[in-house]
Length: 208
Image (cartoon, rainbow, N blue to C red):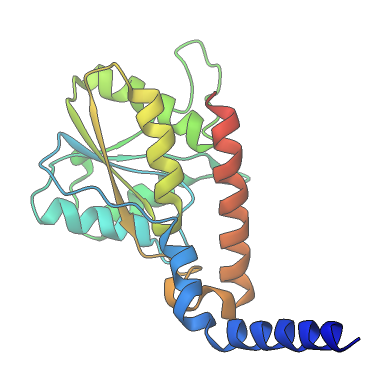
């Protein structure tokens, strides 16, 4: 009986310590999701669809363009509501931030025969971006996406672009729905983390 009581007290103490120390170790679970390749002059910058409500991904890409890391912007993504396509919104934001319209390209939504492209996953976006890079004869592509999405995006992009001779670099942008240092304190942030972990795990099966 005494041993059981001591074991119970020990477990309670461990739980208490884990709770108190959570600001120390929980941020590492968020940082695990974040990848950032060293910046390098690229032929173009691509922004993946799924931006937050303030357009953080597009803003980050525009900042990179202004700093001279590339001269062309490619926006990618799928429909987000009836009659509304994410690439239209992204293009308008980039233009509002000062990028000339002739420097912005949206990934095609359909084939010449009219069959619709569905950029409904990171994998499908990667394939569409590869086709666009081949058409433009790119050698280097810088891809901007939300910080929590970079590990999975990098894995998928590298898989799709392998053996093509095209180098893909992934760059994180901050996201309004995910605070790295306190992601566990807000329902929205925690939901993003758990969902991304599930998607990351699935990507290992998806790319087999």
